[in-house]
Image (cartoon, rainbow, N blue to C red; front, top):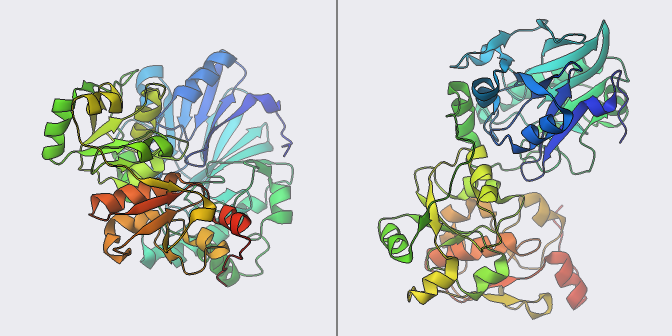
Length: 458
């Protein structure tokens, strides 16, 4: 979707994290400086974009105390000298310029105006960019997003409706901006902070007024029902990160390392309760993995499941293939506050088997080979949209606490493609379940292969 703005479109650079479903932004101020909005702790993409533009980050603005990733604003202040701009009501424990409603920051030719837009969080601000007196775009964080608004239940069920009513007022305030005003949200498709599916991550006020169902709600009660009724479960680590962002995440070295640990050392760590996380592709895990390990295949969603399934007080050892880069493991983990990775198995599984380490295998089955009990570990909304008849449903995020609810006998674990199913199978194996198989594919693949019809929940 093309966004109409009053400044050159290429000066606003979205930096999309497909796994977390979020966008940070780099705004080129035109004088060799830049503004970073909602930068993540993993600053690799932002630094690369700044280098390509030949700009230095002079300001780092956070719209709210993020629950789904750790902010990189404090890091940018320490390493780049950036001025941190953030809601004063967030009471951050490190140097920053606290902003309140209507406060303005002179960016040199452009002005940044803070707009109080509570709802997703209490202290939430949106940042309106003005060229003179003309609004050209607004960084909306977790307030108005493409086709929706961010969830309001992260501060507890007892405050969900109150915050939803605040979100109603905030969206109506934003909707009063001129129609061509660009909308640059932080949360987008794939975010557990609640965003509908779709490719568009930016929009305009006019487009949202025409197409966002929340903005067409005739009254606040309808708005609340639509917003609250659309949210599902969210990762466990969301309950920890806002407070870490308030205190300020620990500063990081430029290149975190993944220390190598020989098989004997890994055995000792296992005996002491360390968790092995196997990030190899599902097929490799199936062919042989360390008993008790948890498979979380390395892909865009790796960090989400790592933070959701591994308790924060558990030390972690990584098993990877040689072609999987350590940076692509360590940085996403640090981005969501996982700092307990103590190292990796040196030499990977070949070194483990050469040292006579025990392994366990997991069967892979094709869609036309599914038989017996089926355990579907997808999200509620996915399951409701179409599932195998008679399938048992336990969301993957709740499976560590629900292994007793899974069938004790043979079972086929399934998801949409196979990665989450492999994670689920290893969690069940870890809890003592045996004779498990993983479906390579999903519900639609099964229906196509068998000619049978999926069940749908109303």
